[in-house]
Image (cartoon, rainbow, N blue to C red; front, side):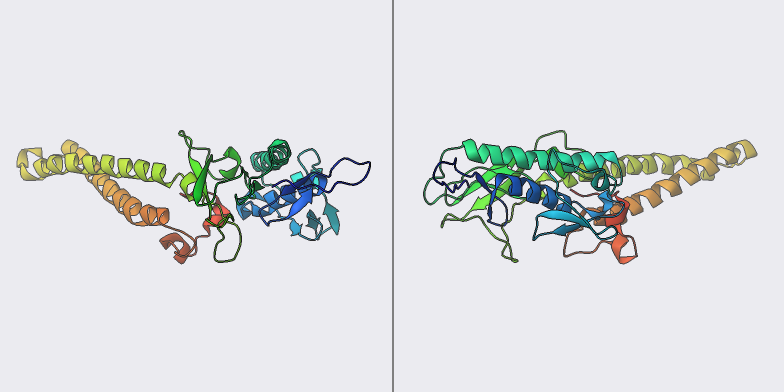
Length: 279
């Protein structure tokens, strides 16, 4: 939502809305939203993550006692060096740039109609004014995909505007956007099912061959025994692969905030490895 503070002889001060419901002056908004883009990124993106200073809307490096006021056009080398690699730094800068453009869009859009949910930046992307009692949909931005690239088909995030003209809040009383629909779990699940199906076909094909090798005495010769052992190893490999993919990898696809997968229960920290089957 856009608000202004006109004063005599001066142009109105452009203020833009953040996910915390604050209307900040453009410069402060740019720094705060860019710092929060950094804050929201997962731990796997960093060598050593800097701290977010909410009071000043900046990043703080405790090792050097330095505060960094960041923005889409104001990025220090110290902040960039905290990322694990350039791809994560690029995603962060893309988020900062999207926040900057969002504020400009807020400023240029007409005044929010009375009773509507206000235009806002939600921490990842921009949302226009919304009619009460509706669900807004916006394409998922590329910079929200940290462990995998964007899906081949565009997916949409959802944000609910309540009948009273306010954005839906979660159990922590924070405005919340549903990004679960942006995930690639469905794609991974299809790939997983395809892999399991191919292994099953291989197993079904190998079993008759092994039966023939074992049933006919004429085939009990050293040269055929090599083939028999090869087929047996392929059969065991296929069975182990099917069990692992169906039980372990399939369980990993069901992991969410309130459910620990088999890998996590056995000491595997997926948030640090960066090879999860997730959004």
